[in-house]
Image 1 (cartoon, rainbow over the protein chains, first blue to last red):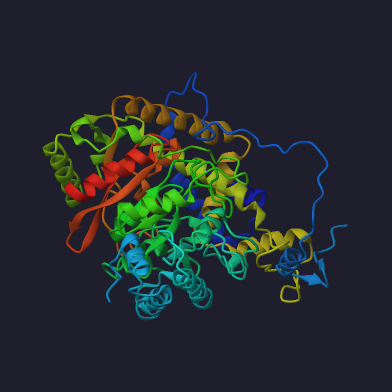
Image 2 (cartoon, each protein chain N blue to C red):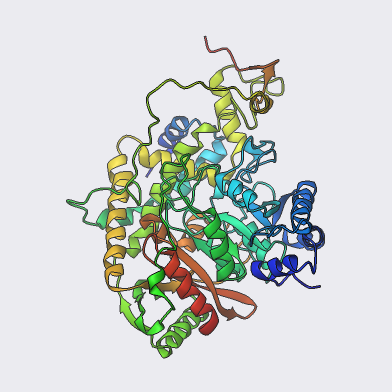
Length: 97
Length: 483
């Protein structure tokens, strides 16, 4: 079951900030839950294929041809309004370079 | 007039015969919510103005003499993980606290076309992760039958709103029992439709191979009316399927003597409340008395369903929730002057997700990331998907011989607020009878089946994929003759 360092590693993979206190709590809880999940290890699945979806799904592709995308100014306005931080109509983020 | 106990068809008749106006009905429901929801806390948001406007439009239609549809002017509630254009949609999470939907979910579009009236948004466990609504970031909904108890979850607000007569019907979503278990706890009818039968476009995704939108209502007929309206293929949801559910007219009248029901012994084992067990057994006896053929069956892989479900659903959730990073929409808990300590882009992600997500969501993201990570993928995620195949096969074999499977919806009635909140695994075990259905994709309906004291008991009817027509016939028969 995950130790403290591994718990921190999982959190970093998930881009999830956790306080020390939370890390300790989650580590304990994960151990208990994963211990229960071990139950499935006893199932013999040799020769069994995984089921990723309950029904056969196919990728839906649009016909490959020119398409003129019309811009919807009302929608654009709403999407820009939803930005957590902006300058005029531009989305603001921390410098990445 | 006390129309709060009325079904969709009964209200429709009132409207059609001009005994009451749509505006009067909507107004009465809004007033009722104002009065009772202080105690119940089913709603997160009310749409007073737009609801009255929608109702007025219906009244105009009626006075112009145009014939109105069944759902026209019927007030309903929507779980707050389904998008209604221009209104807040929070999924009961701080991270989406101020998020305003820029489009309608397909189910809402369809109900708008029928001119049903949206009263507002109902409470849920954050991102639909939970079995009690206690994991909402904003409030805990109370069970209308006993205010010291939970309404179930995650669609607890929707089920409580219908049970408290604060809406004629409500929409919920069911990933592992989130429609059926609260319906069972609150004493109303809830349907989880076949996977792929209802478009999820505009539903905030939790676990995409399991999520399904469905109705919660007072009776089976209302569920059926709503389902018929919201079902169907949608080009915006690649998993939605075109299928005419109500084609099989040749079946004619429902003949119970031709029905075969399997009762899996695994659903009556350890942990089931005695009164729940007795109520379901009594209903099964009555079915036998009505010439339904009953047989005890075994679904031996049932005991692995809960573990497989939580491995798969948390894995999918960890991927689906990666989009909440504080960049394009939702709340950003970093990067601005309130958080001068955060220097880099990564700090925005970490801090936003740390502050924006509640404890259960974090737990599930961690579980999912763990089972998808290198070294554990084979043993956990992939293994769970293989176990899922075995569970699905088991159901499919059963439906070659039986029309329905009947089980309790939940091993117990509504539990006390606070009873399971500190023990995540105990909370997960609430879903033990509902998750197998989601893994296999079949439809299932929870029907009220007696009381244990003042607390409702729910009976679950499962049928094969894309057989909602049959399921409704059976449920209507049982509603009338059995429970």
